[in-house]
Length: 101
Image (cartoon, rainbow, N blue to C red; front, side):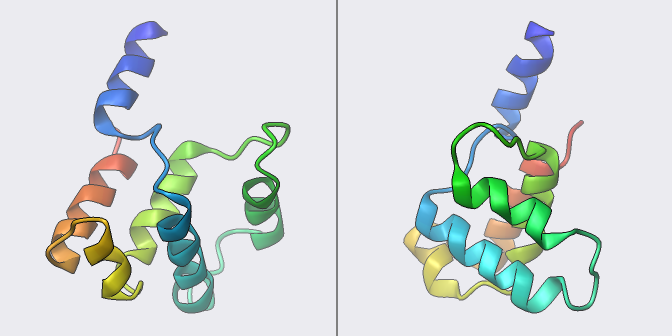
């Protein structure tokens, strides 16, 4: 199990973006992705994130997939603020976090 956690840490799969970027990615997901692919119960997914109390876990793999999907729509100023030169670089970065291989 320790090796699995180490692997996931190296991939960034256990890392959450800073709050401002995270919130913008979530907003972009809800506004642009979810209406066309309503695969999640948004209430069940977003409530634990809003609470942030550790009592209601969220799948980090699912969280990373949502972050990745939202990078296609989030305003570029938020990606630039995190040091990404372009959307392609941000998408590659978030894809690596969501992809477990």
